Every structure is written in C-alpha cells, then in structure tokens.
Amino acid sequence: MKVVGIDIGGANTDMAIIEVENGELKDIRVDSRYLPMWLKKDELQKTLKELLGGEIEDIDGVGVTMTAELADAYKDKEEGVKDIIGKVEEVFNVPVAYVSLSGMLDAAAALKNPLEVAAANWIATSQIAAAISKNCIMVDIGSTTTDIIPIKDGRECAKGRSDLERLSTGELVYTGVLRNNLATIVDRVPLHGKWYRVSSELFAITADIHLVLGNIDYKDYTCDTPDGADKTTRDSMRRIARLLCADLKLLNQQDIREIATYIYHQQTLKIAEAIKEVSDRENLDRIVTTGLGMNILGRKAAEILKMECRSMDEFLNPRACIVAPAIGSAIMMGDHLTEL
Image 1 (tube, rainbow, N blue to C red):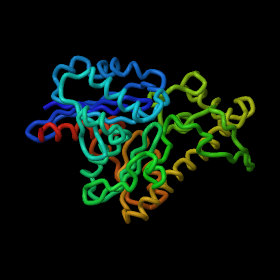
Image 2: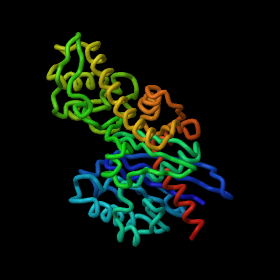
Image 3: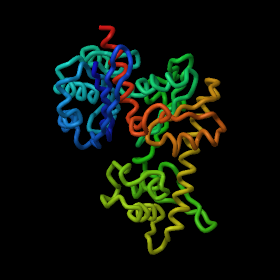
C-alpha cells in the first residue's frame, strides 16, 4: 500500500509518501515546497501535482492536515478550510481524508465540521512521538510555530484543542526557526555593556539570527527575506543591524553576533517557559523534539530545564523530521484505509 501525507501550512506545503507491506513500514520519501498561501493560494493544486509527479497515479490514499486556513487570504478559518478542501479534492481520484481533532474525516464530514480539521497538524505529529515514548512532551519546532503536546499512555492529552485555546495553555508558542519578526522576541538587546531598544519594523527574522550563528545554512532559509535581498550571512547581518536602526558601517560582525546570540537565547527561553508550564501541569519530565528546530531550539530548551530529551532524528532522517506532520498524516491515513 502506498499512502501520501500532505501538510498544507501557511508558508510551506510538505509531502510524505509511505509504503506499507504486511503492516510494516517499508519506505518513506519526503519533499516540500515554499508556498505562501496568503499570496498564492490558487497555486495549491499545481504545487500538489508537482510534489507527487508521476507517482500520483500509483497511490492508494491521501491524508491531509492543514494550518493554512489561518492565512489572511481568508476572512475566517471556515472559509480557509473549505477552500483548501475544495482544491485538494480537485487533484486526487483516490480516497482522501483529513486529520481532525477526533481522527480522520472524509471531505463531506470535514466540510460540515471545518473547525475540527483546522490546525490539527499536531495530532498527526503526536502519533510518531507517542511511538517513541508513551509518556513525554512532544516539542515540534517549525519555521514559524512551536507545538508542545503532552502525551500520556501513548495518547496525546493536550488541554487546549484549537490554536486559540493552546495559546493559553502553553501548548502553542508562536516562535520558530525562520519566519518570526525579531521584534516579537525582544524589545531591547545588550551591546557594549549598554541596553538598546529595538525597532518594531519587520527588518529581520529568526532565519537571520540562525544563519549568522551557523544554526542553519542558506538552503534551510526557505522563506522570503524581509527586504527581498539575498540569503548570505552578510545580508542577514545587515538586516539584524537595522533592528537597532543601524547598518554595517555602525556595527561590526562581532556586534551582530552578540545581538544574535542574545536573541537566540531569549527565543529558547520562551520555548522552555512553555514546556515547563506543560511539564508542571501534566507531571511529565521527558521531551521528544522534532521539526527544523528540534536540536537548535528544542534540545537547548531541554538543557535549560534539565529534562531528558530525545530527538525524532534518532528514528527518522533529519529531513523527514522537518515534515513530521505529513508523515503522521500518511500513517493515520494508512490506518484509516485498513478500517474502511
């Protein structure tokens, strides 16, 4: 059986193809495309076809999860979910089901209950984390957000269900490796023994500090740059300098690295604070990290908290970990097909 999992995010659309034989996972292949849905939602069908290529004729089913319904191309989440489902259904002629808060739903059921499938990607990822540790906190750090999901006895037990609820429970933190405005992480930075308040303009993003610090390379910098310029270390340094209303004639490379290091630490603290909230509430002391930031942010947060930490790349290759919700969606769809 060959099953596809698709994670349609606001900025990236990820795909995983899994092959299962006699109930055993034989192969996983993954791919991804940068697709800013707030600008190019009408290119979704084309993107899905490109991701699958010739294999579109050989698949047995498709599992889909989404967070793109929050993109400001839609007036509300319901409109976004319905539009995305409509576009997906145009592409495939095999069974398609959507990850929801209560399992897999076909298109008809999902259209009747659109908020059940909105931003349910963490449900898919938690299936993988639960297989690694039956009692843990899954920390999935992507390009933009961090999901912090408690798992007990092999099942997710998040207190919040919607994004709105999870923002209040410590289970969702709007910070990630690439796309966050640095001014949302800090309002001032230390330099030369003084504190400097920062500009709240969109001058630099988290991808810039992680590129400068060597946490990622330019190939990982998959989103657009704030100024439309290139993705070299020097370009990132220039963007960070603007955070202090400066440039590379006023600040040198050592200055920029000092600023970047401080912001990186503050970002890690924000994640650690939320993990601690969930840990204290649920009495869990083990973390399983995944996503682009699993080691550069997730593992660092675990070190701050002195908590045991395992990375999903112990079981999947690092590239697969970046698209874990797509893999989880494929696994859930495979199980769904066997039940039909």
